[in-house]
Image (cartoon, rainbow, N blue to C red; front, side, top):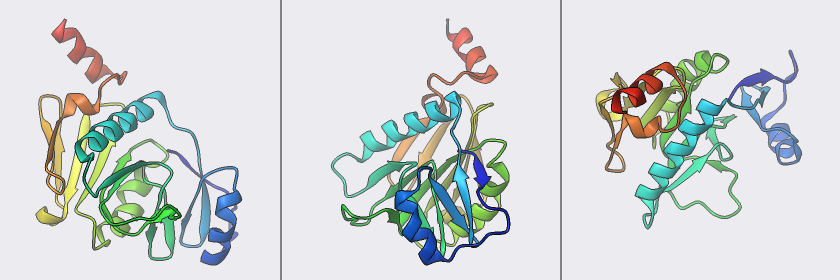
Length: 195
């Protein structure tokens, strides 16, 4: 989802952010003391997020791991962000509003979030002791980038015809399934080739 700075040069303490977030009419991320409103997402972004939620959720049914989409924050030290998806295998309670132990984080990129997702959030995410895999998914072309702790966070790319392997949860997912119903040139040409 897109980020918009809510207040230019106005900082909140962590306590102020946490106290005001539940009553906020918009979701807000909190990075380095600044609050960012979360804007809406495109059709492609939503298709990819829904596909990932369904595939990961179905695979994890009956396990201690749970998949969350967009409404559970991740605490990164004193920062709080809303990844597009996350998998948490810790014992969360019904009153929890954020995860401190995600195993997988997925971000669907956009023009407004690409820089933050590939720099600021990347550095903070890979420093989470629990995180095993970080996925960056392009909505306008077919490209899935996976960074894994087991590979020292070196990027691996998957394209149409490939499969994405989630080592931490034992799932292999065809890239075409990640992009089901997505409307971009790559997928449209792929669908035509199957007709």
